[in-house]
Amino acid sequence: MQLMIRTIEGIYQDGQIQLTELPQDISDRSQVLVTFLDLSKIDPSKLRQLIDQLETIAAIGQGFEELNAGQTRPIGDFVQEMQQKYGISS
Image (cartoon, rainbow, N blue to C red; front, side, top):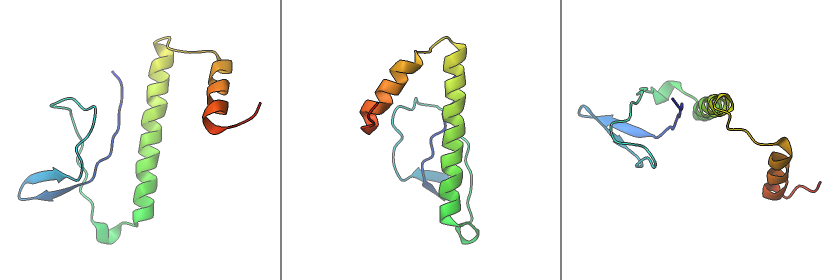
């Protein structure tokens, strides 16, 4: 099972949650976790940091799943891709 965390803001009102954007590449009837925030007690920068950390943890988990499934590639290919993507000379 592939772990995926995607965070989308929304508003809870009258017993329903209205999302600020529609998620892409999510199947119907996907399981979700809903967290209610008291914005008067949360520093927005700390919230963004927490979301970034959760997404990082999910990406690491996905990497381990791919590794365990034998979906690997040579390190040289990865280095070359990063050099091209970020304009790094060798």
